[in-house]
Image (cartoon, rainbow over all chains, first blue to last red; front, side, top):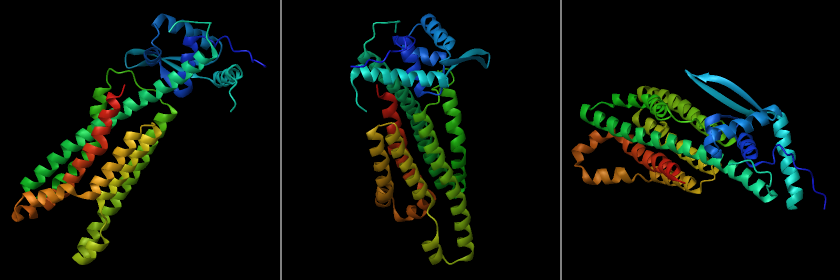
Length: 97
Length: 220
C-alpha cells in the first residue's frame, strides 16, 4: 500500500480545525473561529500565526467601529494544501472515490 | 482543542467533518433568527394593518407593509449588536441569494400587479377585473413558501421543507376566511374585505416563517 505523506502543518487538531472552518467560510473573524473550535485565545493565536507564516491563511487586522477586528481568510496555497492533505488521508483510509 | 501530532486519519476526517457541520449549523441558526424575526414582525404588522383598516374603513394602512423590511432589518441589527457575526460561506451565500431572488421577484410582481389592477379597475368592467386582475397576496406567499422549502434543502433541514409546503397548502386552503365568515354577522363581512389578505399573511408568517425559525434556533 502506498501511503502519501501528510502535511505536518495541517496534521494537528487545532490547525486542521481552523483550516476546515476557513474552507467552509470565505472569511472569518477571530472570535468566531475561537467559538467554533473551542480553543483558548492564546493557543489559537499561535496556530493562526503558524498557518499565516506558511502562507496558508491571510490575516488582516482592521477595526470594527472602535474595536480591533482580526479577519482570517484562506489563501489559494492553503486551499491547495488542504486538498492535498485530504487526498493523502484517503490513502490511509483506503477510500475509493 | 490542543495541538496533537498523534492524530489518526479517522480523527482528522472527524475534525474536518465536525467543522464543516459547525459552519452549516451557524448558518442555520442565523437563518433561523431571520425567519423568526421576519415571521413575528409580519404577524404583528398583519394584526395592526387588519385592525387599523377595519376601524378606519380604509385600505390605506396596507402601506405599512412597505415599512416591514426596514423594521425587520432594524430588529436584526439590534439583536446582532453584540454577537460574533457568522462569516460568509457557500451555504450562507446560497440561502441569501435564494431569498434575494425570491424577494426581487416579489417586488417586481407587486409593482406590476398593482399598476395593472389600478388600470383595470379604472378602464374595465368589474367582470373583466375579476378575471384579468392579478392576485398579489397568494402569489407572493407562494414565492415565499418556495423560498422556505429551498432554504430547508440547502441547509439539509427536511422539516423546513415541510414547513414551506405546509404554509403553501394553508394559504391555498383559506381556512381563516371560512371561520371568519361563519363567526361574524353578514353586515360585518362587507367590512372584512379591508382585512382580507391579513389573515392569510398572519397564518403564513406563523407556519412558514416563525415556527421554522424557532425550530432552527432551538436545534442543538
